[in-house]
Amino acid sequence: MRILKGNPVSRGIALAKVYVYKAFKADVHESYFEAGQEAARYKQFTDALAVAEEELNTIVTSLSADSPEKAKIFTAHIEILNDEEVAEEVKDMITSSRAMPDYAVDFVFSEFAMLLEKAKDPLIAARAADLRDVRNRVLRILKGEKEQNLSSLREKVVVVAHDLLPSDTATLDRAHVMGIVTEVGGATSHTAIIARSYKIPAVLGVPSATEIMKNGEPVVLDALKGLVMLEPERETIHEYEAKLVQFLEDEKQTAEYLDRIPLVASGERFYVGLNIGTTEPDEGFKYVDFVGLFRTEFLYMESEHMPTEDEQFAAYRKMLANAMGNPVTLRTLDIGGDKTLRYMTLPKEENPFLGNRALRLCLDMPELFKTQLRAALRASAFGEMQIMFPMVGTIDDIRAGNAAVEEVKAELRAEGIPFDEKINVGIMIEIPSIAMIADLAAKETDFASVGTNDLTQYLHAVDRMNPKITNYYQSSSPAMFRILGRIFKEYNKAGKPVSVCGELAGEPLAAIVLYGLGLRKFSMNASNIAHVKRTLSLFTQDETEEIAEKVMMLETQEDVNNYLKAEVAKREQKAKSATVAKK
Ligand code: PEP
Ligand code: MG
Image (cartoon, rainbow, N blue to C red):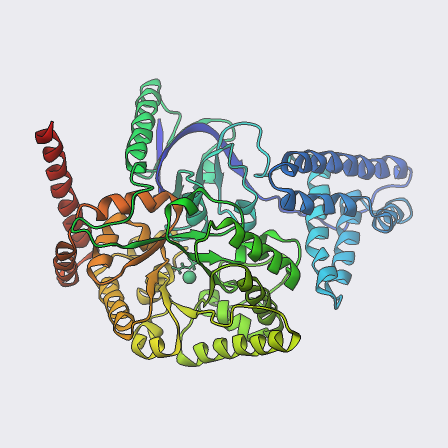
């Protein structure tokens, strides 16, 4: 047996077959064939088109029932395949200029894509990305390579990839993906967040995984310890089959806390929120008090074009209708950094995580920002909603964001379009510069939510995506708790609501400290709700405060975690003895 190691970022165990997922990279050169082969070469092209259409039809059929929106993307691809103008030009290049089919396809599709990209209408420009997608499909078929697609898999697999793009995870076939292994990505990368929200065990940051692991070979994934076991022996398989049963049993026991009212041991209430990234119904809505984070960028990433105001309005209304009465915090577009849109090319930056992203980008592209704000405000007439800006660094940012909201409100008023006049507008605190002036920020905002994923990245100056330095990415460091304590104190003092919607809120050990520091609103992925409710129910308010004070005086993250683990173990033991005594 061979064992690879990585970061366990989404708890669980999986036993399945390896599916190595490598996005196809076309390598085409200008080349021509000898006279006399015209008909045969042209047939290669038409045959490839036929295979492509067959592949796309299979995808559309498998997606239509559950994900009609995703199916539409692939239906549009079939239309491109059947575009007569494109096909005629390829035919001409092959039969008249004797260009090799792959060169002809690459040339013609790329030319058309470039033309479309120049179009003023963003809907037309967006088709360029689809043309390139179809071009790659046809080129792959011409090269004789098999299709790789995570949206319709035939058997249960552990997906192994260099990294998964948000567009890959958005269309992931959840019934067949039992586990995820990637070469890059840390605990707060988007792959990790999606894996947790889908409850798929994941181990990220496994160097050379796509080279070492072979398609179809059996693998045992221990995403509790971060182990990837290849060529597992029979005993290992039995051992892990038993561990899987135990894991599911533990999960079931914790799940009993799911629908309990969140209370600490001394009876005080805290509030649990849900983080969502789609507009679909979610089991989690039943067990929470609010939606602390609706990541709207997923809407933009799944779409084949920049979503229009009406499309966004419909999506936000649908989300509110599905949210079972929970008030929803809609976060405005947070792209840039590792999140890109296939239909919008952003200039390359030296340091994209420090670059023109999120609110900065929205302020830079007022039309894009206003379109989203109009859609959000219009939807606010149909349910309880608040608006939140990501990546706020200064009071200027807050003022610019608020001004945009006011401008859009005035427009809607003038047009007689209803919206919630009293809508709350707040910020994410995820840049240390705004955390340090939380008292001033509180004056200019209706609420704040702390994004601990980015706050850790910027406070510790450590790239959240880089697997080489995950030990430097310390979201439970004493430094983090000191800065968090400061934010909660200032917002509580100002009487303005404050929550945490970063991954830290869903970590049971950290939640004890956050509560002790004054936090009462914890927003998390559905898979963490029961764990946090269970752990906090073990501690009285006074105990959490004592613990928080102690934690801020500890020296290292390891000290913090060891101390918190010991405190939980003590109480679990006490609770167990009490149950035995009762019996
Ligand atoms: C965060 O940074 O903590 C956060 C919630 O936002 P995201 O993970 O989407 O950057
Ligand atoms: Mg963030």
